[in-house]
Each structure stands twice: as structure tokens, then as C-alpha cells.
Image (cartoon, rainbow over the protein chains, first blue to last red):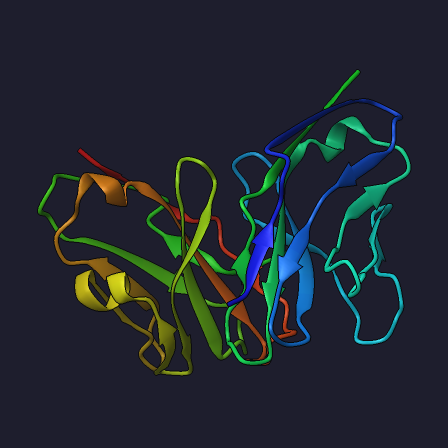
Amino acid sequence: GDSVTQTEGLVTLTEGLPVMLNCTYQSTYSPFLFWYVQHLNEAPKLLLKSFTDNKRPEHQGFHATLHKSSSSFHLQKSSAQLSDSALYYCALSENSGTYQRFGTGTKLQVVP
Amino acid sequence: NSKVIQTPRYLVKGQGQKAKMRCIPEKGHPVVFWYQQNKNNEFKFLINFQNQEVLQQIDMTEKRFSAECPSNSPCSLEIQSSEAGDSALYLCASSLAGQYYAEQFFGPGTRLTVL
């Protein structure tokens, strides 16, 4: 069956340093991958999602590349900002299903 | 910004009581999802609808929850007999299409506390 793994529960970074949050997946089919961000006491919202071609999705300075060979969709940003502090969820959707399966989430804390 | 509306924002129930929460999806979104986010921030899919029809649901939902999305009324999720382990944030999401690549728009959630 399909699954999503986010190995880091908490990532603490100093402002200005690069961000990389890991996401790997298992899927029988060709899945779509998503990154959602949830700020404190707010609803989760889509940050970016994979494309069917090899384009790299980008939003608010974040980007992620779907690597089918390694089953990964890591989230990256070149320079962390204090406002990036939030929960980040990687999610997967397969063409055999109708809902997205979420990883356990990574809490990103950016400190001055 | 998402326009999914969830009520109430907070719900407190005793064990064995019914707990009912509602969701109004974004206008024009025929697909509605319910998720449970526990205290460890883990998401669990509960059930989804396309228009008024159930698309998928997990065992727990089938046995202990009652959910519907009637035409021209809010969708609802009701726990028939609340248990302590049901304390969680219940998130409703909607999407424009049932396709697996469709983005989901989330509401702010209903935080249920079962005493």
C-alpha cells in the first residue's frame, strides 16, 4: 500500500540558513505528491505539489523535486525566515484512491 | 485563502455523548473530506463525499461515526458515542474535483475534547 515518511519530527534552524525537510514515499502507482503548511492555530494549506512532467514546483521561496528513482519529494528553501516556522506535511495521492495520505509532519522552528 | 467553514470551533462532550460538527465546503467544490488530527499532529482520513455520495471511509467511521453531505445543507460528522480517544482536531477539506491530483482546501477545524 501507499505510505509517506517524514523522518524529522522537529527541525530547528537559524534564520538565513537553508531548509531541507525530508519526504519519502511508497506507492504502487505513479503518485502525486504535495506539501502542506500549517501555521499555529491555522488551517493547513497547500504549499506546492508535484507536476506530471519534470517541472519543479516553487512557491514562497520553497521548492521540491519529485525523484521517482529514490521515491522522494524533499522540501527545500535557500534561506529560512522566522515566518517559516510552522508544521509541514508531505502528502501523497494515488490514481487508485480518492484521498491524500499524510506523513506525520515536521515542525520547523526558525530562530534568530 | 480557504473559505471552508467549520462549526463549532470547540466542542466539549462527556464520554458516551454524541458529538456533532458541521462543514460548509468552498462554493462549487463537490468533494468533501474529513480528517482527524490527533495530539501528535498526525492526520487520519475518516471519510469523503462527492456531492451526496460516500466515496471512501475507514472502518472506524463506518462503525462509530455518522456522516452526511446533504444537498443545500452543511456536511456533518457525528460521533455516536464519544470516547476519550476521540479528542482531536477534526478537519474538513474540500476540492474542486475527485481526481487524485486535486488540491484540498482545509477549514480551521473543530477541536473536540471528550472528558
